[in-house]
Image 1: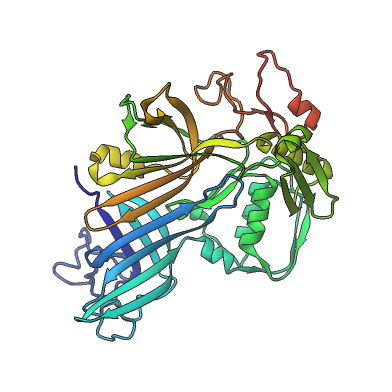
Image 2 (image 1 turned 60 degrees about the vertical axis):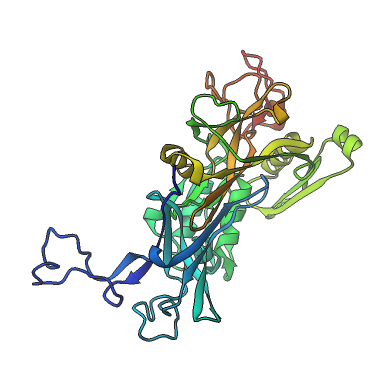
Length: 434
């Protein structure tokens, strides 16, 4: 067992930095079957100067929007190679904001983003450190301002595509991973100056789905009927069972952070649609959630969303919230199983509090991943949400368990009465997805 290898790469123009590249007619570097890269921009390994790395991606609460993923890298800068004022540096005029950064561990990508800020500190004894703050692709979307144009009535995947194709956004085709979506969106006119990221997050909320930047840099949209992949060869348990990976710390939440028994949904051009759970209000008081300026195509669908959210969140939440791991005491196989996990994956967690009573075992949805990497240590924290909002799949080991809490998917045109009062041949007890 050993500390997994974390490496940091920065996109430089290799013709301007101290990197050997393909050189025509050179006896060694000019061979066509050689290993020297062509000129132009390429990811350059700067790991030899790295002191520490941290990564934070995802969200901690189910109903929150995904925040921009971020990473911080601290470099030893005693030779001033990362000092933008030092003209003799091999990275002079290359180490600057908006440069692409890729971070890998054991060769597996954990973060893709861009330098946002560079801070240089100088200390006594000729010690210096350069600290870069990096942000994922959300930084590009948040800085893009849309020009005025009109959308046609369409599904969320098509609407997101239309925004990404705008010349003022110009998001690469290769960096998209988009579900189709279910909720039909109204036609609308986008006003000049509208923030691209804010508009895309409104589309996400109108579905509702999940919009985030994956660790490989792809803008990812998961719609409300996308069943998260269950990672069967990974289980986080304290019982030593097959495929089990031990955790160092576990946090369980039972509270009202996602307790809402009155929901108000308002779409653009529509009237407020209100859903109440009177029984819950009598027990816990009125806990309100309001979402406005959404884009669904009818007030009826706005009401379906309001009633669905009340149905899902009108009781206090009991869930596994965070698991913590040390990778430096794991085998490489165990390390890689953790490193391969991504936001929106589902895994099994088993926990016997204080080794008293029966174990608590359930599947949970990954909503956030954090890394803290030092010279001889690597810590990972994973945040979780409940698997409650995904379609019922007959005979599926996770999404088809009749005693579970996975909703059965119904047509998006179904009325709320058809949704919550559905009685199928199997006498399912689940609420239906809308």
